[in-house]
Length: 268
Length: 334
Image (cartoon, rainbow over all chains, first blue to last red; front, side):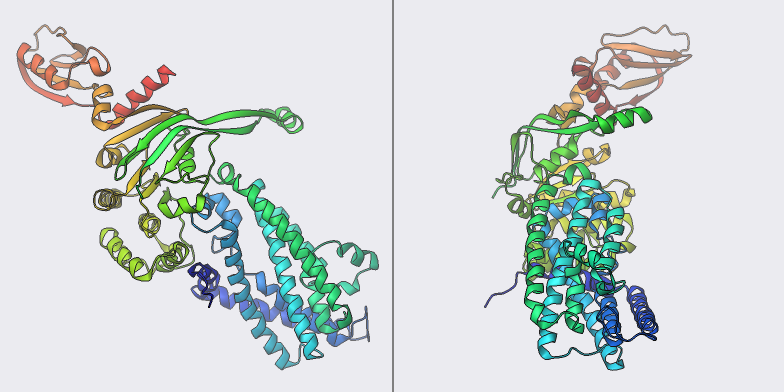
């Protein structure tokens, strides 16, 4: 039997930190509840005088929008307050400790992110079950759709992890990633379909965004869930997501190697 | 495995862009950047024996931290070699990490949002320390550093002194034979400083750890180190026992004598000069600099034998003066 090395427990840092900070959990709960109510109300309002738009009926659109809000919770932990962002470690010079432990920085980062995403998943799942029970979100059309959605969501979060990692790695060169982060958050929300399903945008925009990794993070799994992408297209969409994972994995691996040479000059 | 450190001809050069002054200069730097080489450490050679505490001293920007970063494996030298506990740190970073502990001034490696004990547990897992061993070591550190009164507090709520004590414990939890301390007591009050010094003395004397310490606090050097290495402008300028350095650079004593008779004529004595005189008060000092100068005790004997005095006081140079003299001589030699 394979036993995980004890270092996997690095993944507990985020959940532990959150549990020790109840006000942050209360704020997260309130924000999530308010966002879901507002988003559901908005899409109900938009569909009041319409039947099917952009290939989505009202229930599909509301489900998509609410699931997008729930999914955004997966990587929305307040790391800044916990002084555990790469930019803060660079600023305070504590990034050196990442290179002084018998664990490569990339593994430490990955375990931290994994713990964070699992913690976020617990929130999202709880929110999903409440929304499902309240009839805000429609259940998946079939077990096959549910399975493909789960796999696509996993791939989507994997892509998102690498996108966030690239932004964090930028700090090794720029010391500041605020502007890049703002652009990323806007691009991620717009191009992944958090603000509105991509199906509402013009064709040229959808074509353009297909060359970027963002729609692989959320738009693809959510479109599979609501049935806007049929199961027959799932294999192609999953392979595109897998392709992004491979490309970004190689790119971030290259950046980690280059970043190791920058630790001193920036984080000294 | 021995905990010795061997440094041979270690050098590190950084390449930086020159920032020209003014708006036009900044524009020129942007369009046509000029790169210059900065030799942060040049040809530094020294050894630290197992169980020895060595103070690595030098002014700000002298190259101390760069040297430590090469020895911890964070930075690769431009030339030269280093071995720490038998490992080349920049070639085998992870293996080296198991042999060393490090504290960098006020920079904490603890997790800000977690109670200290949780941070210790995470480090235990990262270093794969058995639980019983971890508990025993924590108990030992608690006895020396009184950690248990605050180790259930979140790191963000600790005082500086409490946090540095926790960081020291965190750096030693995996029982490393070599410890690097880069200004560990900076900004701490005297009581906590003394507690930390006692802890370090214990780690060296009882546990046989090798410690490389950088500090600007000469009291710390006096209390902890028997040997110092002085670097300036990236070059090693002095490597010797503290007593020897005192002998070479510490003869900056002054004798403040009060004459019994204010009309006494005062002149210099062999090896002793009159620095100044104000009425009955006469200040004597050494005639020659450094090692050739008379010791304060020899001078005292001469002055007492020659003059009738109502009182006399000795001002001996403290270690700060000694180091200032050593820096000045090193500066002149460059």
